[in-house]
Amino acid sequence: MKPMRHRLPIFYAAVTSLFLSGCGSLATTVVTSSQPETDSLRAECPIEVRYAAVAPAAATLAELKALTEARLSALQLKAVWTIPEAETFIDSDADRLRLQRLLSVVLPALERYPAVLFERMRLSDIALVKNLSVEGQRRRAMPAPQTASVVYSDNDEDICLAGMELRTHHEFYHFIEHRTYADFYYRDPLWLALNPPAISYGSGGATAYGKGFINLGHPSAGMVSRYSLYGPEEDKAEMFGWMMTPGYAHRVLQWTADDTALASKHRFIIRFFHDQSGGAMGQDYFMQRAQAVATTAPR
Figure 1 (tube, one colour):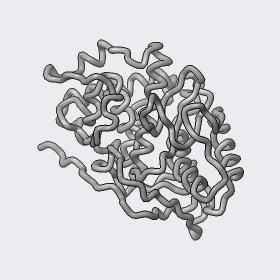
Figure 2 (cartoon, rainbow, N blue to C red; figure 1 turned 180 degrees about the vertical axis):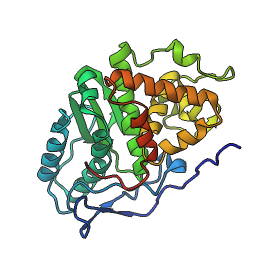
Figure 3 (cartoon, rainbow, N blue to C red; figure 1 turned 120 degrees about the vertical axis):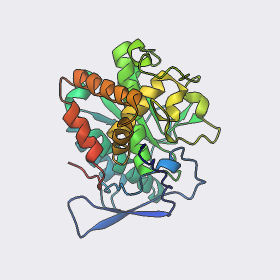
């Protein structure tokens, strides 16, 4: 029998309490915005997954930046705070809360990787900004291989935090795909051969924006999500993003039990990253991701 799919509503409360890592008796608060809900992953949000705040609520912008730079430096990465396509965080109460929220997801997400993968993929910079816009479309993240960077943005929206982590991995996958094939839209014949005969891709992920798109898990055989159907490049990035993210990864493992096409794609991603990471990301690594459903915290 097919495992029951999760259809969990997003946590709509205006305030999310996040416990400060390493200080069990201390707590800080990350406040979500009161903007209208626009998150495409709201129907799939695993609200049981919590993210530890990276700093006390009173931390200044300079302190948040210094902490970020130190943690990224440990991964041989550099923080970038200004890019042409987005706005820069300023030292205001609202922006400090927004940056804290973004960092609470993006930093532990990046720390899940072995640093050797960043080195092998020639990723050097992580841009952390607000209100990112790409060709007139508001985005929460984008790969930028031309500057050896991936960009992550807080857009002042109510958002599923685990969904933001999924996007963190998804966009990094696009970066990896470009580094591997010099093409964001490489139509990998080995991947395409794994699809059931009835699968037909759409015209690319950009066509999902601005239409109230809602992303659902496992809509059909071989597809980890509805967004996967927008193109083979999105199919790969979605598969990887779901496999890497607490609250999502274990669902993929359940679905592969009776979906042979999805199971083949799951094995494809494991083999691909085993090779790309020099063996650091193999079967055991992804099994740990599937089992990670508790509160995430810095290493």
